Length: 373
Ligand code: G3P
Ligand code: CA
Image (cartoon, rainbow, N blue to C red; front, side):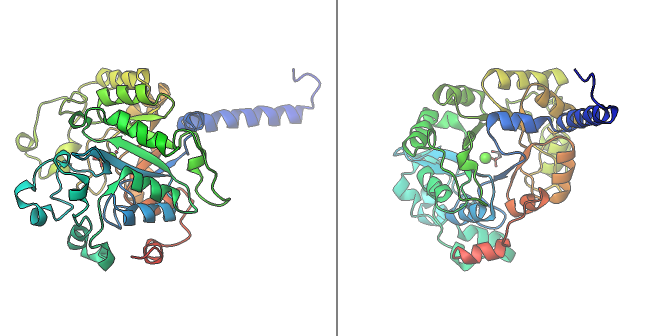
């Protein structure tokens, strides 16, 4: 086929081909993301921009959108009267004033409250007390949001991010997968792909406008049944009925100084166990996995190391993308990217965007001030 071409052109052609192969081999996730219609590498605004504003509130999601993240991430639960809301914890105590307003019900699950009751709560003031250096007077009184209200935020600016929707402890909410389906369908998110103006985040225009995520295998099966065309991620954990651990040590029996130190020592039982979860994810419709990460600086979000090179290779070899959680610092972005990560859940979208070489035009402070905080 190359017969008759000058030697120099043949040499250049061979070199280009080799370089192309090398690039493809270096980034197996890039082709996988393109196939699924998902940005690569992906910046997933974990509970919004939750380092800088109260998690899963309008301030957090609007800041994430304005900074330019690819996805707004949320944990979906359901109220007693059937509304879908974005809220992480099983109870309201950590991030609201439920103990003041409903003292006898403070530790009751979300599913026992109506939406009207939840809307009376202050979901912002806790942040000002917990993080005085990041406090803003206007965070006080922020409300818990419905899924519809998060969608309003996603649609409401020049940047058009996608949604990264988790069914949170879905066994508590039978049928929640169908409820999520109905809301996304009613809002046109399963059919419409609006284009952003040039120069703005345009994930809403991509096939992977919505990504569905869950830790629970039965929920992944139901999400696949409800929305087979929507990309799905199986979140990964070791122990507690998830991937089998190498020992049955607990925080107490391990003698670890804190949870992060304990988690750092938790290992999967075997490579075969890890491979079995990858195979199950692939066979049940996942286009990727969301592994926990051990963070350099420890802390509340530092878990077991499920992003070891052999693990990432197993995922990529099966055609699965890798979105690690929850990573906020450049040192970890670098280390985990070098190991093959295709994106991260992050509370600090601004930091990850900068790391990926597409920094926000404004600082976090400028964004929060401009949007009214
Ligand atoms: O959904 C990915 C990541 O958010 C998992 O951790 O506990 O913050 O939902 P969590
Ligand atoms: Ca989540």
